[in-house]
Image 1 (cartoon, rainbow, N blue to C red):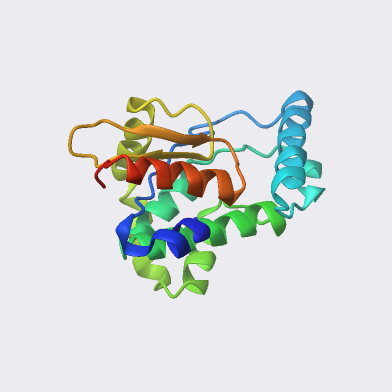
Image 2: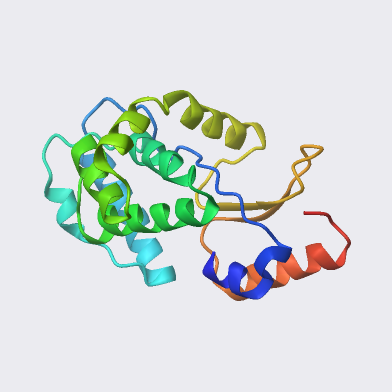
Length: 188
């Protein structure tokens, strides 16, 4: 995202939409879930250099539900896309690299406070953002997003979008695809 912003700036506005990787989970992770998730994390680490704290996998009874972190991001995104992207980046670091429990409202409130949000206001907004978060998930599903991260390009006016990448890619192929898309006269 930083490379896209650096290359295109305001010429290519970014709209952060949360997709709901594992929303509404209620069952604690089983050993099989841990092994599958760890495999994904190792792949992401190797491909991207993203740091991970693998102590996460020693948690007992953890319910891996991404809805609370997505909802927190939606609340912080209300200050603008830049704030939303900063929130997403901070929540990712907190969860993946620092092993913080981003399913816990108190933990999410503390992270929001780190980003300059008033804790009481954040908590109230968080409790009232369920439907807004579901709308993000529905939008993502409606345009065919099935994996994360996904980057699509489009104006949003006619609900036509072009898939740029589904899954992590280094910046250069993504920048090239976006340059081609913009050179073809596609509107943003």
